[in-house]
Image (cartoon, rainbow, N blue to C red; front, side, top):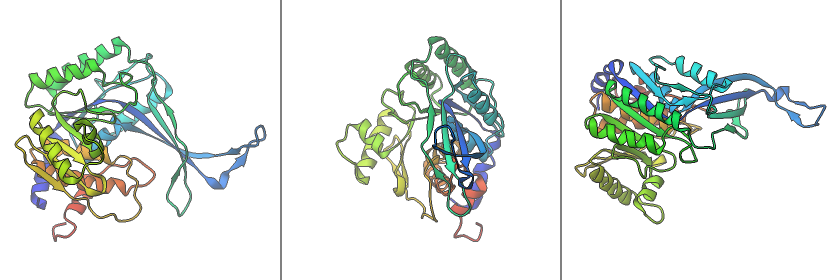
Length: 344
């Protein structure tokens, strides 16, 4: 890809409409100043004094943040939050992002807001150091009424958008947004709108997902393919190509330090090596940046190879942002894509 082609693609972002369907969480960063440490009079335990609180949207919200940073015109989160304080913070964080429309987002007293509370030791000099996280999750099945509301809103939203991202982020099946019922609705809509760009990702497995664009890592691919042991690059290419042919949809596989690859239904496979590391890294959020950029490029009319190239650069931008779940904007991506050219 040359700079002119990249500019052509990103010039289309402002007209795109993308739905992000799935689990949204609040990432609440608690910045602790170690110079202000005390000891509790009551318990004699150390007291960590928080000097700054940074709430931001995580999980599906990280994808939304990346889409917003790219300049996508309209972004529609479809998920749920509780009516608790964390839900208020999550919705405020989403609303703060450019292009976000919360018309289809659900607030319900029947769920608590999925929250990652992340204490960070922050001092001059060293990078932030994360302490043990405090998580708030739902451990019971999503109520049928909430599931029905989500499905109704999904059916209303899909015809209005250019692309749909489905993200399953919970550890326990049926406790989040992407239930069996919602997946069935995704499958119906994929058949009703066969040309609609729909990409799915799941932290547990894409087994049982309808045939849409799949994005996963190598270990998840191996488990889905029933492989025993770790797959080498050749086996990953073969498994991805087989899955793409079976689903008649693109398949994307992230390979950590080895970059990523994409497979098309016609059997073609493209491998994009990772960019060199430029210092300390934090991989949190890299996969969601990849998801956002794959969808943005494809929805803008880009090719499989172009999507891989841009998403790979976005991941490299994000992993070098420490102490936060970062995003990558078009300027940062451009700088990496064309760093060795006069136009860069």
